[in-house]
Length: 241
Image (cartoon, rainbow, N blue to C red; front, side, top):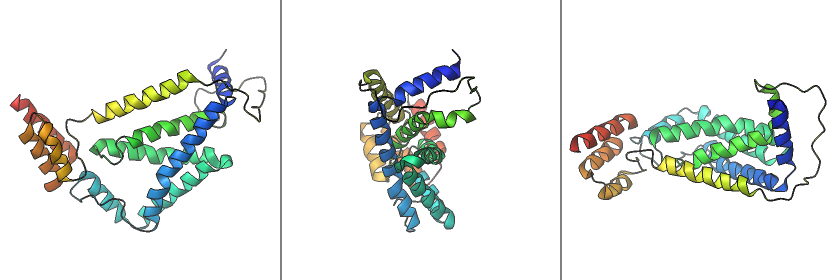
């Protein structure tokens, strides 16, 4: 059996199970709920956050806000992607449009350690990837390894027939989500937090208290780039140790 045929078989089995369908609906609603508020905020012309412009993310968002109709354009695209996800006939298009947006937000959040979407954005990327896999039968034709079969395949059943709860799958979902949260929350020597007070409050439990405060000052008061402040923190910790 070829890879394409095997993937088709797995996909058909999954699509025939009602529990996967429920999970798909949940993901679509959750992702739509994540974009509609932020998109509407941009459409009405309001700032997305109240972060200081000295904060790496605040600096970026302030610059984005000042781009004018580009800021408005992003808001409309977010709302359109969310609405498309909620409509069954356009859900595939919504998932395709949604993916580059949330991937960009995820990489941006990780690059500056932004608390606001540090955990949610990676989980949303994973949810979006699931939706793209759910619509594999519509997207497989653009995949480089896809080879059309010689025999015509039977169409998917109109009604789901599988009732067995996929315990292993949902256990895997929980495990992947937990590992993602664990990795993201422990990937930084020190998080920037949203304000100097929040950042400094973490320093009380740090062994290198002075270096921790210097990092917070570097981010929130001096307004230096995250990478520069993080590098200074690492060097200071190495010297103190």
